[in-house]
Every structure is written in structure tokens, then in C-alpha cells.
Image (cartoon, rainbow, N blue to C red; front, top):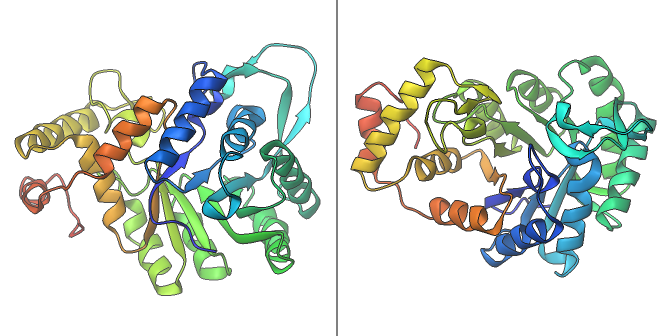
Length: 314
């Protein structure tokens, strides 16, 4: 199983992340991604309590199954609940029809994957990630990972991995297990290169592919302004100022900060794909345009000369 290189589609946005997205808008976003050549789509039960998987599956049904790669995640099992209300406390503008139960047990993983396949309308997925096992490391290593390894050996899934917002535990998975791929969100960006120290070089050494999410650190690198978010909270003043300085330099070189942020993520040799979380066709086209924009070497050099970038990459 190969992760298609280049831009990938992160399907949290079409699951009413923060605000409502209609079924048609979600369909149009996936269709736009397909037209722009995107062939890797990532989802999870967590996103909109299954809404992401249902909408993504419905949109992809129009295309030949062998032409795209789908990943989903396990670790949060959905259980039906009564009582009404919404799921905004977890970031999604959907009715609270289910509750999430942390479950990295072998049985829980199989049940969660069965639910995902039903919502996606598929008989298989290409990649399954353990999702955010930060506070469940012992169970994830002792039960969750072996369960995924068994599913892979049975041919139920093509590849297995772990998806997290931190680099340290992902590095441990790369070193100590036989994962095929890891999804690292927000830890290799223009503002945070913590994955560079150990995770990325270890992945190269072990032949493990890396998918990057959070290229814009939840918004700050897409549109640096007062009130912009960094890792889903209001950005500290120092990071806002750093982003604004980067934006001014980018403009002098005739590019957007968004283009630079995506190019930075894609340039590392460990990285197979960069996920973007678009919620409309317009956002998809913008991300695809930015991803295709050449970033001049002089831009990177100016970032280094001004102390805004400490890495040799790109």
C-alpha cells in the first residue's frame, strides 16, 4: 500500500467542524479535491460523530475504488446516547447522538473499524491509525498495536499506523513497532519543528512514511492576525508577531505565507503527504493552488538570515 505523494484531504472540516457545512458543500469539497488530483483522503469516527466518514464515503462512491487511498482511525468508539444537545464541546456542530469512549482494546478496535466501514460504505480501508493514544500508551502498545498488526496480516487493512499531535510517542512507535506510516499534526511547521529532532530522521532510517497534518497550526499560518489560533487556542503574541514577519517576507518574494507553510511541510524527505482540512470547494482550490506555487530559495534563506527559521530544510 502506498500513500499517494503530495496534497491529501483531511475530512474533519466537512464534518461541521465549529460551524455547519451542508451535505452539498461537503460533496463539492471532495469533488473539487478529486478534480485537483488529490487521491488520499483521511477521516475518523471522532470527526462529527461519524458524519465525516458518511459524507466522505458518499462522495468517493462516484470514483473507482482502486484509484484512491482512504485512512480512518480507531481508539474512540462511538456509543449511541439519548438526551439531545450538540457536540460543540468537542468542536463539531452536530447533534450529540453518540458519545465517544476511549477504547484501544483489540475488541474495541475491531468494533470501531466495523462501524467505520459501514459509515464509509466500504469493505476495506487502506490505512488505520491509532488515534491520539497520548493518555492510553500502555493499552495502545500492549493491545491496540498488536490488534492492528493482526488486521494487517489478515489483509483486512493495507497499512497501519498512529496519528497524534505530538512527536515523542510517534517516535517510540516508529522505533519499537512495525508501523507503516505515522500521521503527525502540527509538529513540523514553520512555527514548530519538534518532529525534526527524532521522529523524521527515525522514520527515514526505518522506512516509515510520514503524513503531516496541521500545516497552518490550526489557523495562524493561514491568516496571521489578532485572535488567530495556534493549536486551537488564541495564538501567543510572540508567535503572532513571528508569523506576521514571515508573511511580510513572503509577500516580498511574491508568494503567500500559506504557500510557504505547505511547501515547508512537503519538502522533508520523510514526508509522503500533507493533509489540508478544507470545508468547501473554494478552500480546496486555494490549497491546491498554494501547494503548487514554487517557493523561491531566496525566501528560505531570508528566513534563516533573520533568525525566523533554524532548519536547513527546505
